[in-house]
Image 1 (cartoon, rainbow, N blue to C red):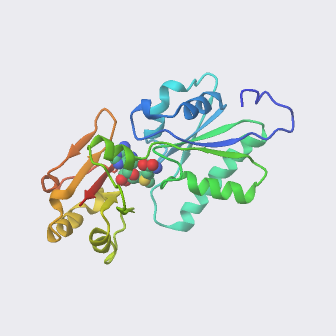
Image 2: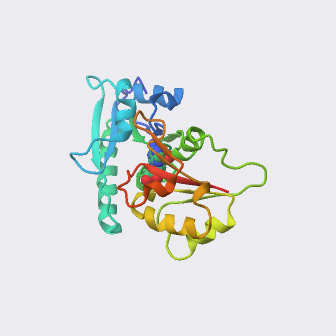
Length: 243
Ligand SMILES: C[S@@+](CC[C@H](N)C(=O)[O-])C[C@H]1O[C@@H](n2cnc3c(N)ncnc32)[C@H](O)[C@@H]1O
């Protein structure tokens, strides 16, 4: 790490750090140390002019005089071939720094292994460059933080939890809502009204809580989810249905 002041042959380590859901105090001590010690901080973005939410959470810990910020663009596309080319290019950029002996840390909002772009990078890097040492530092997920902020114990005893990432095609959402004790819907913003229809049909609208940007300064928690019908909702929002 610090002595990435390197022996010629040393390959840098690659870290994925979960920076938590918004409140900078929810970053782990280990995550903070890794962030300070790596010489390259990889900042994933949706577009080259977009701000990074993950970076905004940890900005105060990073010394841009000493650390390189490597912005990498991962657009929100559905076309897998196009996405793969972005991931592969990103891996090449990161690998160039690693073989230079630089430790690199990839920022992930929430947790890296919980629906994070990091997962694709991790897999490709592992497959192409198995010699690179990697470490994942977990983070507080939006799911855990939203449950805590909305004072909603998620599951206990024999309860079962389902997490659905937005593409609630066919009967899968209905089934999950009927079969599980708690259901968390990520990326709910674009399909909210359809989800609300189903919640009303199943008599579950009162059991749902909507959480936007949990733990951030502009967090919103909405218990009357019917009031959100027809509204434009933030991508960083989820719905918890607790029966
Ligand atoms: C690609 S997933 C990333 C999940 C993230 N890695 C985590 O551990 O929470 C993006 C979705 O997570 C949820 N999400 C992420 N951050 C959030 C936050 N601060 N508040 C509420 N929901 C959030 C939203 O549903 C968003 O559409």
